[in-house]
Length: 413
Ligand SMILES: Cc1ncc(COP(=O)(O)O)c(C=O)c1O
Image (cartoon, rainbow, N blue to C red):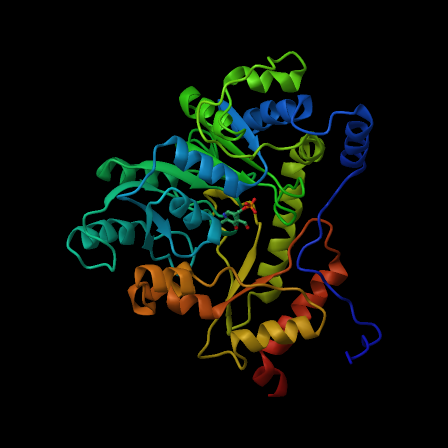
């Protein structure tokens, strides 16, 4: 039996998508049009998305995972090769490297931003060559896949410098980073995420992402060759003219030129995406305002560290990850997550690092001590609810619960 909800309690989901009337109308129009799969709405979404992030080309697919896979495939990733991947990421970033028979060379994270530690990336390459990692020292490191954790961009110019030092390509996992931007130096020009920041930049439109199509993703690139390969491989490796059949005038006599995948986005999903994209900056601003309320309302808690909000970033605020000071907080991370959930407050942890998952431990021999920052910081992480449309009462319920649970001694004293 579950306890009845205490009267007056406000339940707060971890995320609630913000779907407007325009999205609903466009989906209905799409359904009535008789054209459900990839077609004119997907093409429109691609064109408008490329313009919004400042990219030359955009390929719409059915997930960010598919976009990441197409990117590394188009770059020719294969067996005998390794790619620098942050251990502090979701499954997708590393699994696409495995799809290609290559190996993720895991990199530790910055303890505050949680983004990849680029000095550690340099060290990992030296360690690999010197046989100081559990991996085969003969692997050739060919690429790097930075992740903008929670929507706070890593300095992509510094990533570019790392890549240039070691002759690597860059595929950017921007699943959390729409819209987002960074400024490489004081007074320097702002660069949007996807504005030629990598060989390929991959976005997610999963249900809880900053804009959503239910499931969906986008790969953007400045390279017409990469665009052509990704597009082709996203639809069974069919010759170019097969794509035109979506416009109704393509050839029935297509050619299979490679063993591709089935990654294309539907027009139903694109119908949502077109309108979500138009609202993207407004939705970001709402998330930013909510983040500022948390920063203000929790800023004096000694037992908790709050996420940074640097002035040289346009932060997408996909996540609001707090870090517990385990020596000061009267509750463990797991107990806090359970207690918040017990009070009807959705929260999550981003993430158990890859090297602490059985597949990566058992297949490659990664041990907790090999990536010490991620090993210790993940034990402190809790992501609080943050979504456009969150009411002041909902946010106050979260603030009140976090303050009470993390500050018990102070409350009692
Ligand atoms: C960092 C990161 N990369 C990739 C993905 C995969 O996105 P999708 O679900 O669109 O495949 C996620 C999903 O949560 C993610 O958090």
